[in-house]
Length: 269
Length: 269
Image (tube, rainbow over all chains, first blue to last red; front, side, top):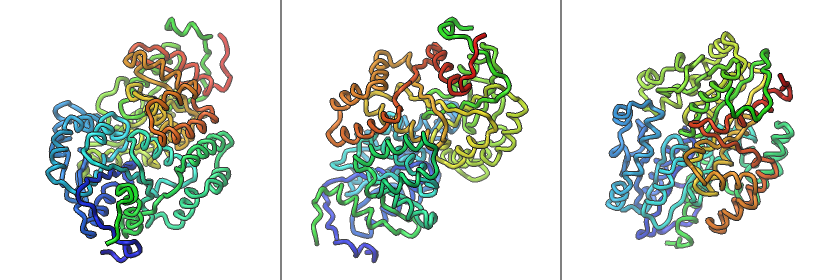
């Protein structure tokens, strides 16, 4: 067991109920790497985790897939068969996945893990905004489902960028209709900026003050009005910092997942 | 001049200032088709319009490009050179475009149109959330810039979907920092649903009532709090229905563009 997890009480894994975790975020935010880290984390803690890759267009993955949509939808064949470029082929391939849901579900049931980690397609909009994504979320047989949304730390260079990503996260949460844990990745590369971002995420007044310093009047008004709406709904709480490189923060993420997925069924050993 | 435009007073085009219009929206929302329709519209009304294609991965376009990033960034070469799949190649190609901004700018200046229509990449997140998109928006030399965001009518099957897309539109508006006109496309295929959507976009109470009928308590609270924030900022006003097939609504869109781009300089003939 990694040293860092000793800060938390040990969890006894409940073996009978499949729990599914969808890992979402913009292209390049670190979805596949976090999937691999979570897989290692669960495995090291004696839980039976498996990975479902939903990206038909990915070349290299940092983990071994247990179930892989590329076995059902081959992007190069789609490009050739329908005479499409990479854009069009990715759109079509993502839509085709939905038609393979019975096969994918059967494979998952054969593997029968405790935790199914679902690595979603590189471009989040293909998954979140086309109807196939929601269809897949609804049709994976699982007692409990949750989503992790990755804020790409390297994209948050200003407080307005932070609000923009918070809106995207909320938009996707509404679209997928899943309880969502918000995570900020790449904490090892963004340095001192992390403290600003965590302050913005936990203190709306600090965020508004930072926005006032950089934005024009119209943008300030738009942003602060939206922020109050988000804040009233408790959005801003609990942005979890993660480094996929050092593994820092994984234990906090696992704690947040447990609270959602085990619904209070955690027991001490 | 198309008959429909007779409803509006004729516009005298101001020839000296380049106005740039970025056409944005999710994959498949109809960006390229609207670009082509707007090009035809301006041309038929004796304005000098030109099209800049920013999508390095598109195969077929419904218009002739005046400036084309595919002349600078070839996606197949990127795939081969860096041994990338279509996902990774699209991400890298979009980032590479930013390094070609001087060439693109020079070409646009040589063409020297009154209206530059910029067709953005198929997947909006590659443009909006990676730093290259904002960089390009800032570095096109133009006196006035605006953005059109396309709500894909076929994706709005529920009021929650509508709010989700409204959040995405707002997120992108904040990210690109451009005045934005919201348009709903595919009005010819969504039928009676259009009336619901237009009601939702103009009457927050009607939208809240529709959400109450379909959503659980938590989602209802989240959504309505956010809506009040958006509404306070005047977001919901002015969703313009467009059919790229029949051309219906284009004249209203042109009117909205004129109000932003000409800053009241419209004069009667």
